[in-house]
Image (cartoon, rainbow, N blue to C red; front, side, top):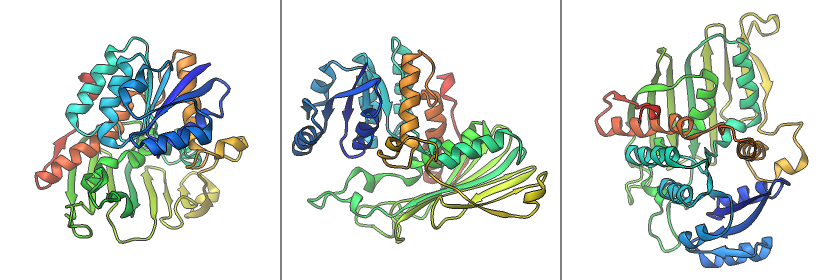
Length: 354
């Protein structure tokens, strides 16, 4: 039985639910800087040990630390947990700067058997997993161009109850590129090597200087191009994910609304798809057990947790290890650097060379 500790009880509540579904794991400790939230969560969910101090939390006897706190804490808390002998499942994005990313790689290399994985839940969305199979079968050929968007209006998440800005108010939106790039990298099987970025500036929430939207143009080593758009301070009800892929033998594209329910495909070598054909897609795996839908984000996190747990039990490399995680995240950091330089090309480092 692997014992689990969860820090950050907003996003972490979903991981608490998922780890509670597996017979191989048990959540034995929780932590949140909000004492009332931690105490009430522990009481409702029958968790005996709760903490507000992260250092004290790490002294508790458990095997896996789930880091589900805000982005500015991901690297520092992941490193502390690794140094305390814990396996780490970290929320996205992986790092808040290139310097942090280098420190994370160093800590993972230094770890003595502990696993690090980033919780890239979009890679476990059902239709994404199905599209990865389609690409692997060669139905659209080699991907030469793709687009992705993650737009989510989050005005309430930008401000604390006392009116001060949250970390999200200062977040360059392109930093949150992992939801878009994770699936694309899994399909393209390439690393991005250069980035160009531009932003709209701060128009919707100028009080805190919040960037409305950022766009990036990314290039892979083989010359394929990706256009990426991220925005969280936007005047749009709700949010959406969007993916569009163009290959040498076909294309696949989701609709923007309703998000992740409908798509169009064209496969040149398939008689049934000689023209664009509408298909239904889903975030839920129809073959998943009922408990897989209890964590949120469809059935994705059920399989994400399963794969992480199995990597520990079988001593194998996690599917989204530190290098893969940074392949998902570094393009956003570099695109924002390009934005600050007026759209100049910025080379994206390979974390395997650090």
